[in-house]
Structures are given as structure tokens and as C-alpha cells.
Picture 1 (tube, rainbow, N blue to C red):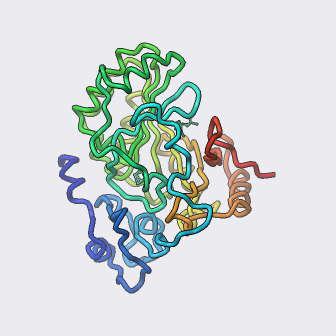
Picture 2 (cartoon, rainbow, N blue to C red):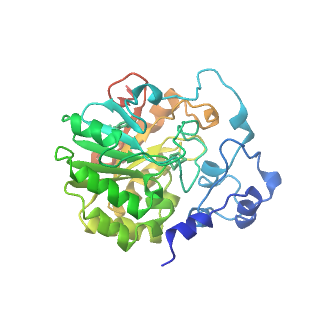
Length: 325
Ligand SMILES: *Cc1c(COP(=O)(O)O)cnc(C)c1O
Ligand code: SF4
């Protein structure tokens, strides 16, 4: 198997190359490369885009759009209030019992709707060594039992860095669960190689994976093989999606997604309403429409395949369920 870092470096970063690969004429799209959030797509993800379809739901997630440049009331740069909840750099402690580490700003794919697109990531990776501030905070907070690895994408970190992190976490007995939120699991399945699997086995507690898949077309043979492998090794897998206009704002597509996740041993976890981040307003689905879609979804799916529809409201002590009557 090819080295995953080579595959990252071979990702599409040029619009014309991506469009050529997808057999789409630039004139079919309303695009403009945004200088602050450049295009980036893995070749695997691009291979799942339907050729010649400028409205493809996977393409729309990664294609820069002039609408991103609009400044719209109510859409801010820190839509979820993360800046206010960082007791030490790289560690967000908003909810009881669990903290989130933003380990790196890097991702293998740039999702246009991303709420972290304006986030002031450290240029270098977070300091997580045993004597660092993050580990000190975790040791001192005995009520924290779960550490969530996030980013950017935590699996952009080298195996060595992940191994060091797990070694440090093993020193803190009250950390019982390590949760890895990653889009690489689905967009760069080669990342889950033998060396990574061996590192996971070093962790003393339980490991949970959360994939980020928005549309059933994002699942195919290669990433399904990875989900099966992780599941066979005893790790639990959950998925979160974002409800996105023109991508998955349709109960039939979401139903198909839940069923395909289930067939891949992944439990649907959250369906997020879009965070109101500047540059992403054109992906928003209104509250009324979200509820209409969700009600239909609830009728179509068994309860265990229905993700919870939630939104993130700054200052709240958990994700907030979207209440539909
Ligand atoms: C979403 C989030 C979590 C995890 O919330 P769960 O409901 O447990 O999935 C934890 N910390 C932060 C800062 C978050 O944004
Ligand atoms: S943090 Fe996640 S949603 Fe945002 S660009 Fe990276 S992979 Fe996409």
C-alpha cells in the first residue's frame, strides 16, 4: 500500500486540475478560489465524484464558491464560541467530563462549510508532552474521563506523534476514553495502516471513532474495508453529518446514508445544523426545512439509525437538540 503522506501530497489543490479530473467545464460552476481557505481534495474523494456533474453532492462540499465571500449578518468567524473555552492553547473544555484537543490545523480535505475555517490554529502541532500544559490540565481535572482528538484532522499527525500522545494519556488513569473525530477515515482510508493500528493498541482505555460522512456516495469499497477492520478490532464507530443545502437536504438521501453507515458498522450519531460561520451561509438549511426533513427521516428509519439533530449554541453546556414538534 502507498504511504499515506505521499497520497496527501498528491491531493488536488488546483481548481483546474480537479475540474479536469471530474470532466467538468469551469464555466459550469460559479467558483472562485478563496485565498484564506484553499482548495484541497484527496484523489480518493475526488474519484467518488460523478464525472461531468457540476452539481455532484461531493463536489459541492469542496468546490470554492464566490458566495463564500459574502458577509452576511449573523454569520461570524467564531460561530461556536470556542475561543472563550480554551484554558490552555489547543484544549477546549466546554462540556462536563470531556475535553477536545485541536491537535493540528491540517486536513486532507477542505470542506467549504467548515466551522473551523477561521480558527487560529497553532502553526505547529499542540504541545501534548507529559510536562506540557495540556497534560498538566488533564491530570489536574479528575472529572475529565474522555479526551476527544480533533483538529483540523487529528489523523494528519504522524504515527510517532500519536504514539507519544497515547503514551502521555496512559499516564493519566482517569482518562478512560479516547475519541478520534476524523474525516481521514473516509477520505483517505490508506491512513489506517498497520503501524497506526498497533499504536491504537497501546492505549489502556477504550477508543471510539467518529467519522464525518455527509452523503452515501462518500462510502465505497476502500473506506468500507477500513470501517470493517476497525470494527473487527473492537473499536466502536459513530458518524456525524452536517445538514447541507444541495448536498444532503433530503430525507431519502439521509435514509440511504444511515443504511449505508449501518452496513459499514457505523452508528449514525449526530446530524448537525450548520454552524453560522462566515462564508458558509449558502449551505444553510432553514430551521423549518430542517424539521420537515427530519420528521420524514424519523418515519423512515428504525430509531437506532436515526441520528440526533443538534446545533451548537455558544454558551450552552452541550450540543442542543433541535426541537421539532
Ligand atoms: C461537540 C463537542 C464535544 C463532544 O460533544 P458530544 O455531545 O459528547 O459528542 C466536546 N467538546 C467540544 C468543545 C465540542 O464542540
Ligand atoms: S476540520 Fe473537518 S470539516 Fe473542517 S475542513 Fe477539516 S476535515 Fe473538513
